[in-house]
Amino acid sequence: MSVKLQRDPVHHGPTTMRMSVVALIVLANLAAVGATAHGQHSSGPVADTGNLDARYPPVEVVRERHKGVDAQDTAARQAAAFTILALRLKDETGKWPWRIEDMPPVAQERHREYMAARDEAVAAGGGGTAMHKYFSSTEFTREVLDHQMTWKDRALIVLFDTLEPIVEAFDRAVNESDVDGAQIGWLAAALLALVPGTLVLYVSGRMPFGLTKLNPLAWRVGRRVYDLKAHSGELVGYGQHRYLKQHTITTTEYHGHASIPTKHVDSFHTKHVDEELWIRSSDGRESKVRLANWDVDVREGHTVSAIGAIPPNKDEGRTIAIINHSTDQYFLKEDEVMKIARIGRWYTWTIAPSMLPLFVIKNQTAWVTAFAALVVVSQLGWSYRWWVNRRRRAKFKKQFVNRVVPALEANLRGGAKLQDTAKDLLKGFAGGLLDR
Image 1 (cartoon, one colour):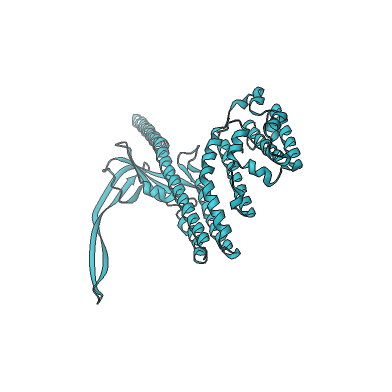
Image 2: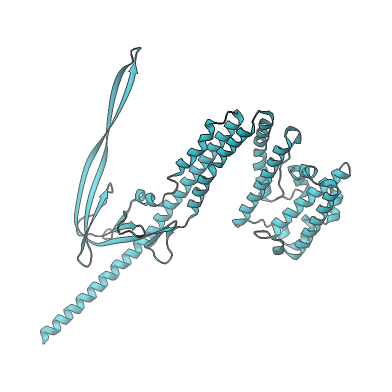
């Protein structure tokens, strides 16, 4: 990737600066990988390899454009220029994972020329820190690319211009403070403790979710497949019990020098509805379904379906929906659905281990860094968890309306036709006996 940051080596220790530059370069390439992997591959003028020289000039032209104050500076500028051009050429003409063999033949040849010229410049004394001074410079990158930058370049420039002051401040604080090896170790422990839980949360969000393609009554949640079992038939019994549940909160206050306690009792009520449905299926068998705080609109004589999510290797599960076929209404209990579909219920507990080093770190800079990382990563984790759960809720509701309800309607119509056919056959058989 061609977009890098310009850094001032005067304010940084050599080790810290080198680590910061490497980290930012890795971030830049990861961002480019992510954009291309999602189908956002850049398609600039170089897509037509006939005008390759317009953006990627020959080696002689690049050498003529980039000359320094002395031989070593010239070699450093040219080594950085050839590296930037080679990376950009590979990014624009190649395909994921950007192998040289996937590039057009003209682009392959130009890439080989750039890399050979880069090796010559490095051998002439333009490698190491001298080259990275230009390689990590935004202005030099613009100069090399002749201001023809893609949207990824511009986005990364904004990102790294924002990150640069933060990285420089941290580098100066570490170099100028009395952070010893133990403090750095505890800081690393605090940061590493955030990794397992965050990775597990991300993997959980990427697991398969939704109704299977072949069976609309099979619900996949990660590695588990729930069977959406429906009790359908005529509602022959319905009971409802409404009541208020009282909740009491007691608070104690202390007043005066004598600390005399004063108790305050506050109470409030919540409405509850308990319902009981008796459903008689087509074979004459009756089943009971109990609901808590659903308040469904049904009455005896309606044709209804009670849908339960049955876990693997289980005979009973959680009731998630009631369908009233007589009124074309459905009642989907989204809270019950999310008790199965929700991810990250345990995420809070994974953050706790990362807080333990905060009680050991004594250096202020290291402590603030660990605390800031804890806050940022945890908030990102909670935001990702909320986003995944919101998408899962909406996806299941859409699939329930478009696939589950029509499938149950079709099953009921098929069962009704089968019953009518059986009745007609019985009537015909009985009439034949009477005729005899």
